[in-house]
Length: 568
Image (cartoon, rainbow, N blue to C red; front, side, top):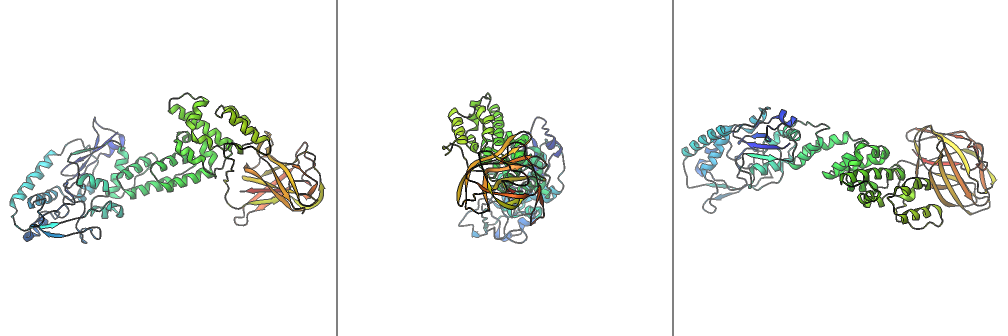
């Protein structure tokens, strides 16, 4: 559906019912604009105008419009709304001949008077079908103008008035009253109808503007009414930007901010980048960081463009495991291949992903996650698969082509709980893992464990830490690393590659496999440990249970893994 603007003598009319319904009657929807006032005045702009020096009030008497007729910028003065924006000079006509005769100026003024003030046309704007022409009104106004020209006296003296153009003065006017004092609210419309290259056509076609959005734009320009809904906000934002109406732009952006959710964050991010709205884009990215899993699962995710996908995958603050990011990227690649009319083969998926594939941080996955997903997808080359398997299994780890920097999605302060009330000496290691089962009452992210160190002075340990989902026996997070201790009974931090999401009322196993000399260990363990946030008073309650099987003797009462480090 396309819109068109009709320039007519008498009134401004639009057909909201047809514009909203998209009816055209085999032609575009039209907007009738009066020749009088800001949108409908005569084309000349920012050029010298002449009037008799001896008859300074004659033109004003012919309708009070001569200073504004045919000009986008009024003279300065309180009655015109002018000020520092306008510059006025007077020069004798003998040095600079007029480009518009007194007859022409008066005719324009009289024609404006005959057709009525623009404020009256705007206040009486009604919903009508606007396919009819305005030839009779034009003829009447032209006859009246000719009569006015013939009745005016001539004079050898003249006054030349120069007005310097002010770009987009409408942006400084926040109310419709202020805008009507000048030229209806849009620098683009001002240039289209009043500028030096203004159109002479009676009908202007607007092929890329939705009728409903254009009607919303007009209602705002003429009445300050903001009519925005979920179905029209994006097209209205486009129209407001196209026709330079920043006040309406701000209303659209505010509407989008208030309605931003995880299930529409990716769609709005794409539009914010398209329309160059950095503040809205930033809010979308923050929402995606906080609700990454839900945002990736939303229907609109697969509709985003490649640049938006890359912008998201580059972030260090996404709150989701890397294997889920890979799965989402594969879904997007399948949709993109179909859009490009390609078969959804592994080769074409890699082709459409382009740079995005290199932003998946495969080294942050567990070996089980990698083996079950990316390694069998066919998207990675054989050499990439081999390189990553070596990275997972050998020490020192070989260099890989993919980023191994953890994503930190966490906000707020780091927290920790200790499950033992006393420390004793001599806990041995023979390759068996120390394990303890636990659950929590609210969602948290575990970032590491505190472990006991050697009783024989400063020592280095090699350690593998894991968190395992008890019911499925799935490793959710792990790290092969080491730590140094100083021989005291303190705990020593050992961190995961990335935070591990722990859901409420779900059983998990904390696991640590140490290689090194005998260490300290904890006793008088507590089955329930509660952490209370000092600032908010929110309580996180851990419940510990015995983990069946080989656990190197660790239990609720005594053993290793005395400390859990987490964020809420």
